[in-house]
Length: 433
Image (cartoon, rainbow, N blue to C red):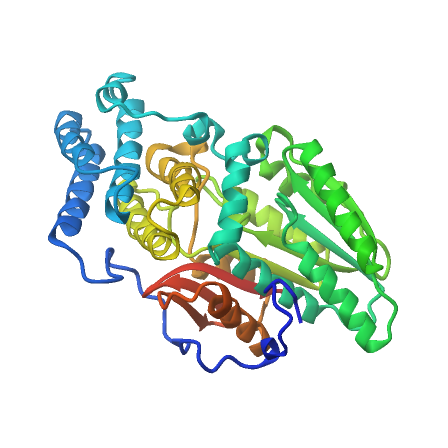
């Protein structure tokens, strides 16, 4: 039993019959603004945003600027979820026009302040931006999205590693603060105690952009492992020049797998960063991972197609996706929450700017739906490992205990889990080998 639910109650191991039933149905593309009854104003704002995006795609910048002026006057980062969403997309459209047409003038006219965290040049510099680090920790603590992914992936790893396995190696792409691993460490220690097997040796190789942060993460994990009686090593793997594809290409020479070591590869919101205008780097990465013969590969990604080559289709998909995100934040956090404001403006605002304003090599948030990842994984020789009923009960329990809003929905499709808001899937977790 993984212990990331912050509860010691024995009923955690029971199936949660009071949680909403899973909907075993195919994923449907959202029509946007569908999570509840909509005001005329909300529908009107959505139509204006799409009309503005159409004008931008046609390079009719004067007409687009006129619509942006209307949108800007009807939006605010401090209003309701629709006003805040419109503010973020208006800013992103303004940045796109500014890049394509008239540098400087539109941003000054709209009085838009774009901090470094939202510039496309620094779009993924998580490790060196304190505001992004703070937002990530808030996102992990306040919303279920990251915790759901970590909890489900950890359970898949725990179940894939045989009881009594004495050497475990986790290759963790984009480790960040390592918040995923203490619950798994505790679960491994508890399983050893319950089965009378000695605790395993756990090695984690974690990638990141800042060596100091990686070392601090390793130190924290080492101290926690010591408190549990686990033998532990942490190996930092630096991603040079903020280029995750360098790891994909050089992986075989950068990693050491010891004899009799069970390897788990963990990709939490990482694969989309390997996509560019083609999938060659991603396919090379998957080929290299498969060659390592891992016991399990865990993958979490956004359930959205933000990688469409056509700007307008990408814009509408992003508008629908972040509508659901902002609606969920509205229902989860109080109206004057500073944490929510920071997450929307810095974390999700950064993503919206990347998807809408950036193009080519500068566009990093290339999210794809699980069906796309499935095709690439299967073509690389991987097969899907069904997530267990126990993992399902844990995910439901997480939502019930910490996020009681009825809007969060858990679904199972093709042996994978989806977490969404109302009728829109937002995140997926799957397991492969």
